[in-house]
Image (tube, rainbow, N blue to C red):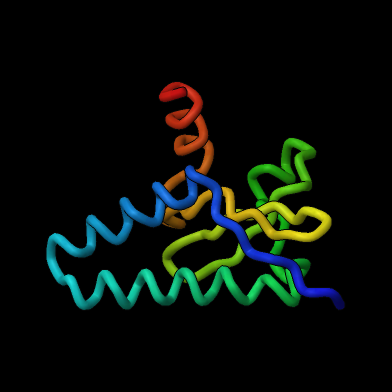
Length: 108
């Protein structure tokens, strides 16, 4: 199986920055640990991108191109390209995905 480069979209980088910034308000060391965990988990997609599941909320509306890896409590949402894996978002798994998507669409 060919390795793919793992790239972060601007939106996903903003998500990561917001997560780390929020945690850093209480514990800087923990914030860096979470950053390392999320980046390391995403990087594992380079050699086995298919292993994540199709995002269930999107599958329910026949959207299959987005997959996710869970790094509790976060959901790393990504799309597989020919030579790359694009990290699209990092979302709090405790939130309703439909609400998050609606919020993002309204913000745009």
